[in-house]
Length: 379
Image 1 (tube, rainbow, N blue to C red):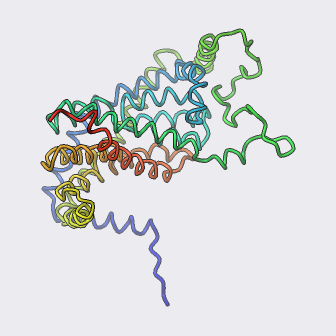
Image 2 (cartoon, rainbow, N blue to C red):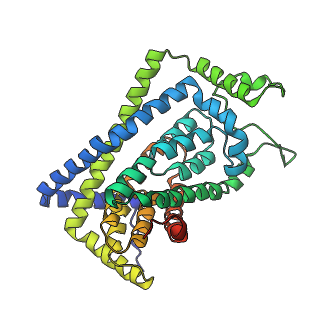
Image 3 (cartoon, one colour):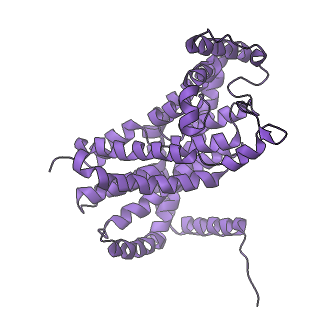
């Protein structure tokens, strides 16, 4: 019996060839979809994300990240099994949306401030929508109902917090196996192999801080040392921050345009309709409106298209909100590609992120049904 094994790279190459052929068949649609993706990047993503990328680079250079790390360590470790420096990533990720959390996590890994498993945990639950997009674009722009914002926010961010609690168990065996031991017994409070919160090469870890010092003093001391170790002038730091942010924005823009074209080509090829038809059958088995299948398929590829389709479905606000929460938490393959490109320079793996996105999506949609009676808009 002959078995034919298709390598993932071969499948990717065939898919790329198929998309290229469709682009040759539909040149006008290719151009229009490219312009649409470029418009989304320039008018929405660039002004929303670029300032956060620059600010995050500046904060790393000034040592503010290390300040938050020391300050939040007693909170982050027992809850999420993460160093306190992850608290800064959580705040920035939730405030500015995807892919800022992954960007900051990659930077922390490159500076050897977190381990691979810690980075995977951090990326898993800091990849969320920003409040401006959730409230302004989805609730007001797509649903024309600002009263829906509290429900979507509670479902999206609440389930994200649950993902953080669940991800604390990720990599537990690997962490235990790599922990320092004496005679086979793990050493309590052993230093991280990546230097915990101290910058690489810092000598401050050799000088024990008196217990009488407050945590605020310790945090300020860590920030001061990190700034001295960085050593760049304000002008040089600002220049490097802008250049790094621009490079990342070009990658984000390219991925948005690419997936806009891919989505358009798959639509004209009839694959989107076929997937939607199969999903309608599944929805009917669970008593869900079949019309929401289109929104789910669009959201599978791109979060903006999926959220807009959910708002236009007209199948009842409860089910539409649940699908919108699913789309926002899944993020779309466009966001997944951005995250994968950011962590590709590290040892962090994509699979834990994928599992967390799927779980986050279904938890968020389920929370919409659970919270509808308390936070749902008045009828």
